[in-house]
Image (cartoon, rainbow, N blue to C red):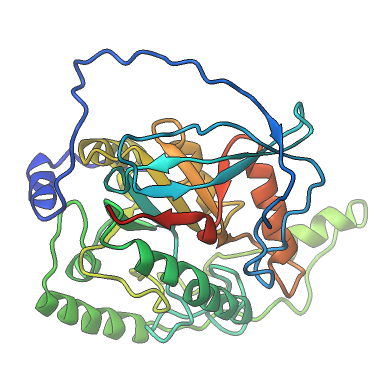
Length: 358
């Protein structure tokens, strides 16, 4: 759902007062366009692309690779982000070096749902579905966050202007005690209180749903259609996920160490609220990670289809996982989703993001 709430300027000022001060561009200044020289030079010695975590994403293999001049060169930029995109017209991958200001950069992790991770929210049995839709797949993604996303966040925390997580729904009386938001500033004490409240609420829920149907009616004229209508490949309704399951407060997964300075973004607030807050913080660049590459990472409030209209977005290709139905590994599905996104989006990877101490 996409709901909007009134713009809370007072809350924003409280938030900004506790954050690192950054310079802002005077909005009255006219921005002149510059000419980009699209000089494509063949890459003679090509660095591996997405080969650091091959059990999560299949490496990108392309015989034709080019390098073009830097695209973003912030003065005194202290965050080097090499990126690539695919061009059918150029008939190859184009690599682009960039130099960003860390204090104008946000790292956003989309939908790191804390399910089957010991916090209390878990997949309903015997046939419920949520997140990656099976407990085994959920455990794999939890490990991915532990291996890939959490180290990246630790490395950039204190350097990037903002580290944030997008979560479903609206802020509630439980999560506002745990996570910093535009409207809340938890303390260590309220955070402990909120975590206790979260565990009690999640653990008291009845995670029991129906079994898959033993029999159902079939239309003899259209048996295939009626078969899938009665027994679809994905049904997250109350039949399998007990009524109220989707109203529970979804936490950030426990394999990510959430700092008290990190921010929670709620989908229900809508994109315009997110955009305005980020702009007022002086953010220009977004490093985007999270789940799932082919769904939430592109189409939710903090997805790149929204963000790329107003910010310079880099999808961190090995810090994301796509849905992988029918497979025991997300390698190929993630490769395909990242490759498709590269038609109109810059792709980077964890080892291509390097911060420089001034």
